[in-house]
Length: 554
Ligand code: 3PG
Ligand code: CO
Image (tube, rainbow, N blue to C red):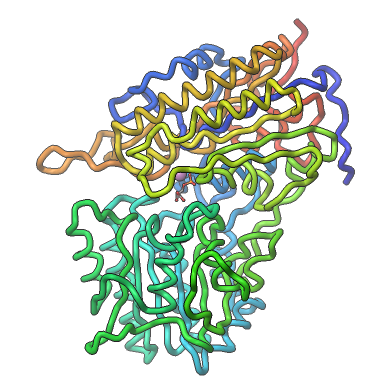
């Protein structure tokens, strides 16, 4: 296939296109737990008035973004993959499901590699323990435990990360019980299988985009060195006890290790062991992968660097080829719109703050780090404030990101200016409703700054989102009513949602005859890339999902 894109014919080249991705910003009916609605978002509301020709909803969950079923909520990885690739790929969750179901996972290079350690070493499994389906799934872990033991693992240690972010807070107890139950069954079969350490995902191990290496270090100390401030004799007791501290919610539990009767850790990672990180999603596992794999490493003092056989569930970074061994081949996301546009001379600027920076770069580009063409692209990261939970800084860096985008637009040095505004998602994940409302206001303000700049230079804008979050912040019953406990309290929903997301187009540079087509009612995020290509004046390639727009004579 050629890289050169055909001219659109009706839409001019050379317009500046601003692409705004609101993270965690779905569409739901007005409701007291719809933080976007409660916040009042004048800029976004004004865009909505353009419906149906210039504003519509698109799917952001389930099969539309390559997830196993339509019960799977959207997430930023698959969302940005779809937005940037213009095609729907079977995603990690599904690929792992298929490899486990067919048993192919045990025939691959990755499994054969770690299997060499089963005779004399321990198999360690490290990952997120929940059924959230965003980074990992407990049913996949359960199958892997069973399969690994059937394929020769005799001693297994699981290092858990509690969730409460993609699933309800407090559910960690249930998941630990499920896992303990499975491990007990393995024990009956003569496999020495135990939980060896743990901690909350946001405080232990699962940092991303090198925001805070101390998070990974805390996990390393527990998982590899067998050291942590809290010691327990079993994991269920650990999670229950640690949760007694009101502030210690599942996602923020401190690190703990499981010790024997003499106080010795039962499962530090030693020379000769095998290690699998069982998350399929890359962003929050790749830092640990570096620590486990790289001989040369200076991000924190590892104290001990065990000689292990390490495999990821997937390869997390296709560019870095990291980890070098993996159980399941990742989706081969190819011919993304970023790569096409770079081949066609489009100058791109992308920006977000650290915690979402890789979303508009790495995920957007099909899980590929780096530039396609250094001379045409500039990616700018605004450092996130670390150590302060986002409900205590709900405005995050929204305005700073918008100002960078504004400057990039006004500079006329770029044809596409792309940002991710994180508030709806990052504050939404804390479950703090008041704070999320403030976050939504800040995001709206940021969009206004960008749209004003687009106005000033006669450009075009595309405002959309990657999945829902802030528009629904409460756990509901089947009929949609908020669930209340006996004291009348609701349970905050920290996770993403199944809701569709808005997309709006406009700006003085937009051809007056452009409108959303009416023949694509079930379009999703993957239709956005072709749309953006059109707005740059190009026809999209045939293998892309069709553009959302058409041009009528006006
Ligand atoms: C996270 O990693 O923070 C959540 O599990 C998913 O959020 P994201 O998909 O919006 O990044
Ligand atoms: Co999120």
